[in-house]
Amino acid sequence: MHAIKTMKHPQNGALKKTAIAGWLALALALTACGDKPAQPPANAGAMPPPEVGYLEIKPTSIALVSELPGRLQAWRSAEVRARTAGIVQQRVFTEGSEVKAGAVLYRLDNGPLQAARNSAQAGLAKAEASAIVAQARLTRYQPLLAANAVSKQQYDEALATERQARAEIAAAKAALDSATLNLAYATVSAPIGGRIGRALVSEGALVGQGDATPMALLQQIDPIYVNFTQSSADILKLRRALASGQLGQLAQSKASARLLLEDGSEYPLPGKLLFSDLSVDPGTGAVTLRAEFPNPERVLLPGMYVRIRLEQAVRGNSITVPQQALTRSAQGASVLTIGADGKVAPRTVKAETAQGDQWIISEGLQAGDKVIVEGLLKAKPGTLVKAVEYKKASAAAGAPASASAAASAASK
Image 1 (cartoon, one colour):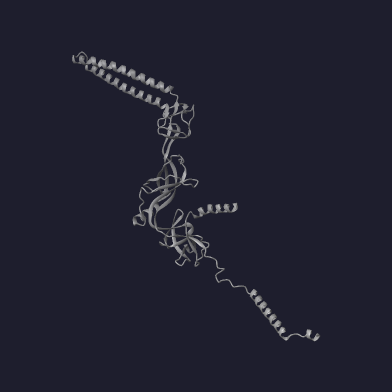
Image 2 (cartoon, rainbow, N blue to C red):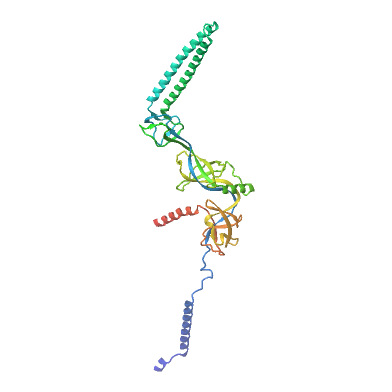
């Protein structure tokens, strides 16, 4: 019985060895699979093409604008002066106010002037009385001369006395007119309407003694003039370009002038060119021009320094690009374009004239070219890019959108 219990069956041992070998093989296979991770796709780590903003070239007609320095000048200006001698009794106007033509500004002491007028009036009355006596004597002598009752000499003396009396009447009338004018000049009035400045004399001052004393300054500043200068060489160049057909004459109804104030801001109302001087200043080599601007709010004041932007000609079929699209180097000016294959290609251009925030391109670009304006740092020559049409207001519009998105995220 004991021998039977200890004996092993040869078939069961073989089965156990086969099973163990199978488990070992499976474990080795699983271990090998874990040591070798799956390979990613060939393009899984590639960066997407950068996005750039482009502008498609479309030729157009543009007005050529010259920016020139100038000074403002009143449309009309008049110095108020004393036209007769006297003591200032009253100043009627308010400094810095608007006055109408004929308004009383000053009143002078008119006592002596009134006395002078009365004296002149009395002199006229005396001359008229003398003339009556002389006329009566001449009238009596006429029939007596015919009857030889008086001599011819007596008659001639009576005739001369009558004519002298008439001359004295005319002189007395002239003296009365002069005295009347001087009396009227004691009331100083505004010769023109406009804005009056500060008073140059005060009550109690003696004016008009010898010279016509300045008393105030009146100026009309709506509209207002702008006097500015332009180089005679630039004017000659412009005229030659117009004559050769390179530039077109700008219609007078479409030409306009704009002002840049001392703080750099633009005056909102446009003006118009009035005239160009006929001579060149030998000291500066410049020609003086004048423009006129409306000034209803009295923002523009005489003497202010300004810069005027004047439209002088029109260039047809012009190609322009924004200034940020153009770069300059030792080799010259260039822009980045997008080719038909979507890749970046540099292009050498010729840009000699700036017009506002645009460069006028005379060589190197043509209609239909796509010029990169935004994302220039991301656009490398020869690389593929994602082209998006450029819009000038996109950057300004994107800021509020980003701000609102950030606020929405913060509220969540």
